[in-house]
Structure formats: structure tokens, C-alpha cells
Image (tube, rainbow, N blue to C red; front, side, top):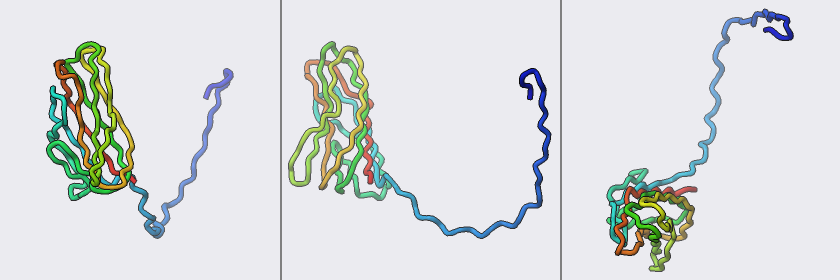
Amino acid sequence: MNQNNKTYVIDFVIPAGPTGPQGIQGITGPTGPSSLSALLFAEFIASSKEGDLEIYKNIILPNNSNVFVSKNNEIDINEPGNYEFTISGVLGGLSPDELLSINMIVTSEDGNSYNVMLASILADTKQEYFSQTMLITFRQKQTIKIFFRKDNFYNSAIESVSLLIKKIF
């Protein structure tokens, strides 16, 4: 080591003896908390028409789960609980000042429905990206649909839409 124009040397040996025998194994500790009990990942068919988006393909994990049931244009959520929703996609072919929105229509098993605004976009370019994450608590079975709202005389389209739903503790 060189410091203050002086050279220092550190010279020492770390003593090492023979390796001792292995000790006994302790008891297994408790399982750590899990924050995820089920998930659904869905991709939707691109559309230039206003209305419910159709599911192209989906994955449900664990695959023996009955928490989610995916249908043509809706998803049943069969258990009450806390859910994290993440949706993303692209809006293309936009005209200046065109107003578009993506909503989730939630219908409970008693027939009551409400809309959740996922994205509302006033176009200023020909293409807009959107992404939204939210937490929702359901107290009973729900059915959800993703709805694309636009003025039909525009040529805009929604594409590359994916939805991830996680049931969390």
C-alpha cells in the first residue's frame, strides 16, 4: 500500500486447522407466506369495432384452479378475495383529438353491474400505448368483460391487449 509517499506492507498468515465434523441438521422452519394463490393471463383479438373484446388465448395457473373460468369474451372470478389487475395494449390508426376508452364491466352473481375505467385516451398521435394496474376486492363471484369504446366513424383499432389477473392474499 502506498500512502503519503510511504510504502507499507501487511504480511500475516491466517491460521487454518483441520475441518471438523458436520453438525446435526436443525428442524425445518415454517413455510413462508405466499402472496399469490391463482392467476390468469389472457390475450385478446385485435378489433376496430366498439364492443366487448374477445379472448384469443389464456393461461390459468395453477391449471387445476377453479378461481378463474375463461369464456369467449368474459372471465368468471369464482371466489371472493383481493385481485390485482394489469391490462396493457396499443391503440392504433388514431385521428387527432379522437377520444377512446377501455373499460372493465363487472357483473356480480346477483346481477348488479358497474364499469371500471381502465384507460381513457384523447389521441394526439397515430398510436398510443396504455397500461393500468389496480387492486379490487370482490365479496362474491364476479364476471368481467373488457369493453373498447370509440366513435365508430374513426378507423382506430385496439391491439396487443393482454390482461393479467392475480388472486392475492
